[in-house]
Length: 452
Image (tube, rainbow, N blue to C red; front, side):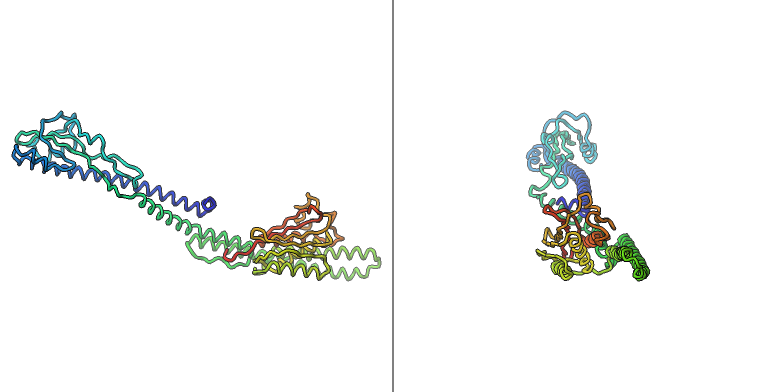
């Protein structure tokens, strides 16, 4: 739940749910207040009409039978009794004034004190699905009534006994209301954040495959505009990478020709020692040109992604190294399916193995599956790298002087190329000096999950 609320969908869902609940609660509260006011007004009006009818009917009945009549005619809410008048109230009430206007001047209607005992404990009307309640504010009072024949009566206006059926189950109403609102908020949140998730996934896929299919221009106008801008950005990046690779390829091609001519002319140098030095420098230049182009290609993602068997790919790379008379051993299995570019991954593994053999005489390759990822370790038997140099060896053309020199044939691009390829596949490369000696390179590659 914490992870869900921390996501964009969760935040939109929580905001919508809270906003809708507050708005619905406020609307329901105002509606209940208005309903209560209308009910009070309607009941007061009904009681006034019933009081008028009861008083006029009582006057028709002979005085000797009025007490018996009233014992039968009285109903809940109105009680008309014979008796001496009570003390008058300081001010007339709206109920008394309205009833007096309806009966006419021949009848004497006035408010009296004290009020009926039931007025001290009026019923409470439930509000907001029973979560709140409010006191009944309708008419509740005592009235002195004098008939046209002069007899004095006493009228008690009482509050209703109950305001809502006792069997009403507000829990079911609240549960249904909350489920409906939560479902609506979740659907709106998903509909709102789905385009953002698609853009985020497209950005992640773009890092793995620059040649991925462009986004479909569908949905709202803002989403179509964002998708079009994303597709244009992808096209510009792809064009930039293509132009850069083409430029480097052209430079490499143009450099190869004069370098070849220089090598041919060096064959004519009579000083054998000078000739060997110059040819060595020339070979180093050619190697730098070749690996510079490889570095550019490692940052280019023109090769299409394929589903690969990592164990087969690793075994093939180690077999190729063994066929080249390199001391390579392979142990372990990952059982992992990998989405990647075969040539680039072979180049990455080949660079790691070549470095281990070149600077550590051998390459001990182990692979295992760890938390949905493959961990490939390449350990050599060399002197290792000073801890202060471990992070810098990934810089282009950087070489550790004690172990990597021109004489060994290194240009300082092998690890840079390997890291670029690993990062393009969502992986990483780390270096560490093994406690038992030698340098250990750890390559992590994530597993491929269909539909993710």
